[in-house]
Image 1 (tube, rainbow, N blue to C red):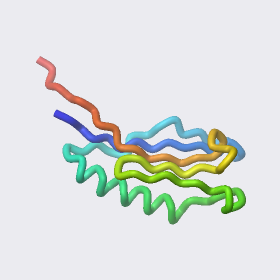
Image 2 (cartoon, rainbow, N blue to C red):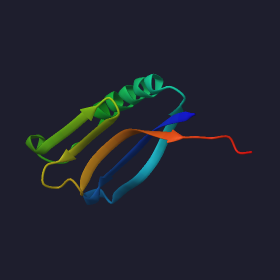
Image 3 (cartoon, rainbow, N blue to C red):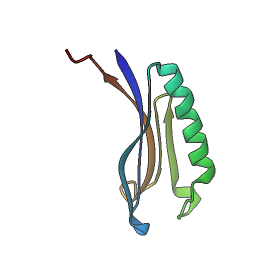
Length: 92
């Protein structure tokens, strides 16, 4: 059985924020995970505070992966969501 887990991570080095990863939920169907993922990304984009010149903003988006970062400073400011498939098996 596969469980689709949505992970979020991010950093804002100038503000001392380093999120190494948080599980936002797990779903038995990829389609449901992608629905929730899309909602999470939309909400993040609305609330995101970009503390730099918007011309340096970059974004990559696929059905299972979204990342926003500052060009030239990606390790210092980024926000990411991704769907990770996890194989589960029942313990005997």
